[in-house]
Amino acid sequence: MEPLSSYIILSSALLGVGIYGLVSKRNAIRLLISVELIVNAANINFVAFARYSNPPILTGWNVVFYSIAAAAMEATVGLALILVAFRLNGTIDVRKLNRLRG
Amino acid sequence: MPDIAFLALSGLVIASAVFALEARELIYGAVGLGLSLIGIAGLFILLGAEYLAMFQIAVYVGAVVVLILFTIMLVERERGRIVEEEEPVRLGRAGIYVAGLVALAVAAAVILLAPVSPEAPEFYRAPLQELGRSMASSYSVALVILGLLIGATVVGGLTLVKIEQKEKTSGTAQ
Image 1: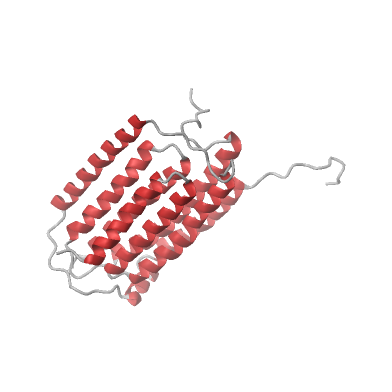
Image 2: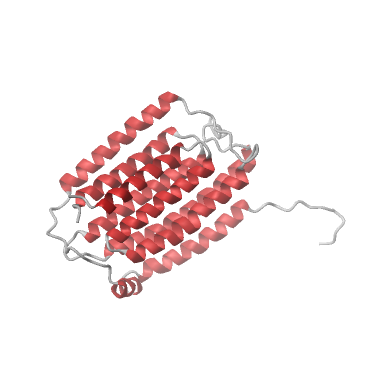
């Protein structure tokens, strides 16, 4: 069985990929994909830490259960907002959605 | 000595996550996201949480990715592709630097600060009965709030994307 640190390194790498997408991408859907990747990195950490305690604790699994459901809802609302923004502006490039800029 | 399954799954997860962000066509990006999420479900199985893996596949791959695909199709223009402008190179490089720094810092902090765990049992599967019991007893309030949240989200999403019906004829009676 691989050590706990390998799971931590994997989830940190996934977090890095997500942050890279958040910083450098302009398409709103890609930003949403990045957020999903970051949430999944957190989920991996929860499950791994729960598994590697002795005895394994169930709280980690419970938290991930709620986290997955909440992330699905967040994606629903985010995609609805993207659709509305596209109807209003004709683009989902987040650097062009700047009508509220002073 | 890391497991070969762990190595393969983590390679799949990271590679398809990068592909999801870098694919030229957004629709392939969504498929890459789905692959990455399936890989994470495999990691959950490795960690002994088969139930969570099923839940992950059902909710993420079955609902979220399909929702993203639908949105891409609704937003699409110009023969099925969204014209994306090239990101400036400067921004991409800044993103790589920031992401690398944050990931390194988080990994180092967690590995250094994590309590040295005693030897975890070699084989372990999450007891489904205990999971369900704790969900119904100590986490029941969270479950109810989750249900309310789902209802509010559905209503909110439908309200947001609803297209207002234009009044076709002014002569119709109220």
